[in-house]
Image 1 (cartoon, rainbow, N blue to C red):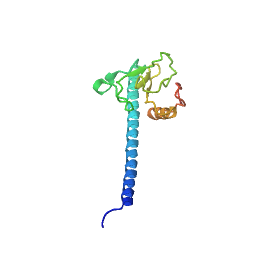
Image 2: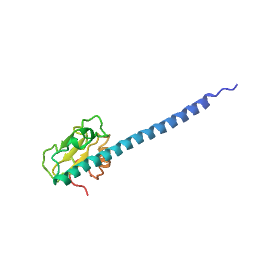
Image 3: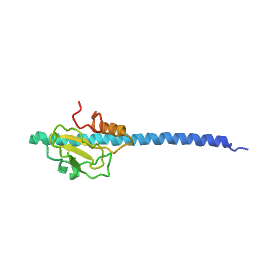
Image 4: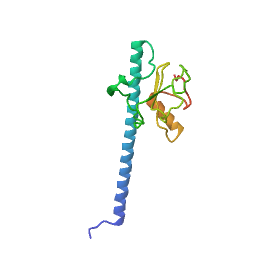
Length: 156
């Protein structure tokens, strides 16, 4: 008879499952990397507009104007695209011009953070499974080296 044995069928099924698992993890990793690259580009675009304003007016803008961007809206945060196009302007009200990073680095309230006293702009990130994971994503998205989630100062 010319049929396959049960063991041969099981070997083929296991091989197909392994190939599927490898390809799914590769696609998921590529999606996460593209979101991170888009977040980094968003930071560069908005920070660039803040710098242009300062060069033209000689001071940091009081807030980030949606009119600076196409469609007259701030870009979306690619790491949290369901948030509105909003920026928290130093929401803790400390008036601290030495603050270069927000106290809250996650997107629980706003997708972006801006300190109008020194022009510092940061993209906030979704909370990850661990604080270390959240900090790693925050640093990667902003090109920073913040040592902890509570840190708010200037990082060399």
